[in-house]
Amino acid sequence: MKRTVIAMAILILGISCVVILIDNLDSHTSTSLIVLRCSDSVGQQGPGGERSVGGVEGLVMAGSKDPASLNSLRGRDGRRYYVYKAFLAVSASAAPYATVSILRPRSARLFYGPSSVVGTLASRSQGRGLIAASRSQVRLPVCGPRFTGFVGGIVIVRPTSVTFVVSSPHRQTEKVTVSVGNG
Image 1 (cartoon, rainbow, N blue to C red):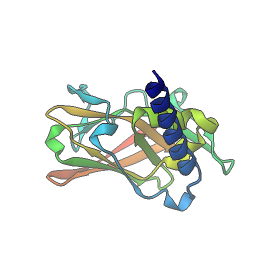
Image 2 (image 1 turned 180 degrees about the horizontal axis):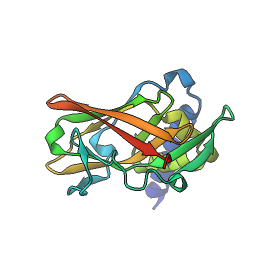
Image 3 (image 1 turned 90 degrees about the horizontal axis):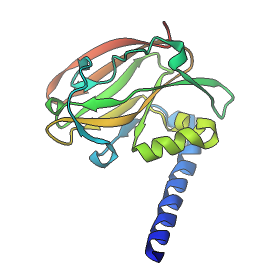
Image 4 (image 1 turned 90 degrees about the vertical axis):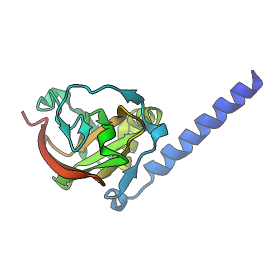
């Protein structure tokens, strides 16, 4: 019992330190790549029946045109941001990984990570950590024979169309443009 309490305290302290670190990142680091690991995924699942772009499902999002699907947040800079939650799943055919990049608009960003960290960032300081942790690219590892799923979403400064590029070492690069809150 005592070991469990100590382990939980260490886990909470570790997550808090990561959140504080991400909260204090400068905006000039927001163009870097998020590199996920298999341990960051929510596991393996079958195909979701959505359109696959470069071996990734979840970019062509049903309902993404609806402005009501956006969550409004204020950044540390006082600027308003909008978040659209988008679960991405990478196919084994994209092995060893697929990289999702935002081509335009340049202000759009992605946030992905372990569900516990994404949840903590979204709920702490009115979501400011989520905005600070967002980047222009995310690398999704293939972790088995089925689709590997990751939680996260897209951060935009206004409802707009977002153009994604999906690349992989062994597949042809694909591009898709999706309306996000721009119905």
